[in-house]
Length: 291
Image 1: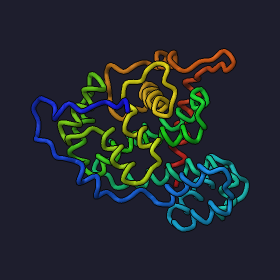
Image 2: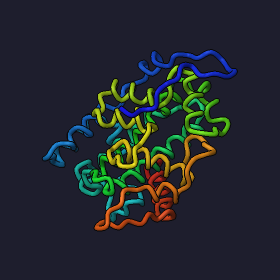
Image 3: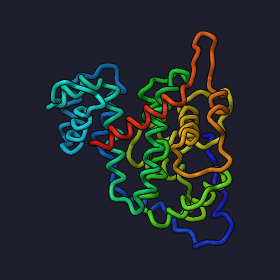
Image 4: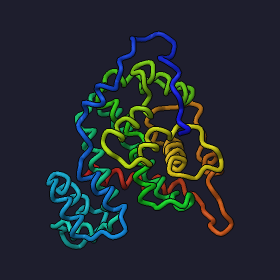
């Protein structure tokens, strides 16, 4: 699968590892309605009423989506008081993206270390928006790109939820390289956050392509590779470079270096606007936080 492989429990001083698998398997399941919506919108024909009916089966999630639809971010002149109108205002793809974002955010509620969790959450949101922006370059639908960016670090969020205090050690100091960061996770839990993400998405029933994203986004990426995993990999790196890192990696590439490696074709010129992307990320984070 092209994923980074484990190398045992690592070396160096520290407490003995605590196998994380059992704790991860005891975490609450991902919101079933959000997963059903993910599968439903993958079909050819979906109607507003069908989506609204599905969302109504989770009143808490419905109310959060309505709160987002009524936020100043969307500038509706009238109160959006029902799900069908909210879906029409947001659009199918946007409604799905926000439903997944709200569901993932609720999964991370009440963390042991809110500051660390917030950094990880903002990194996931930033990666989602960057992946959505870059998706056409990879010939991938924008909503698929958003979903890939949003869930790529779900393993990290899961480890924080299951082992918050212990996992905080990984975030306390900068790491020289990404490989060093992953090795520190394996020393603590006998797995890194990529392996944890693959385990969680498989257990929750995510489509296989998104499990590969969660499990393989830090793998070796051949220059010619242009699939969903490669898109998530690039979006993750750009989120770090733009100032939305989950963990500080000292030897990480700069924005210009990453952008220079984007897929390019003569008939589809593209210019990455760093400041516009930062503003969009900040607005999205604020919007979802309102729910």
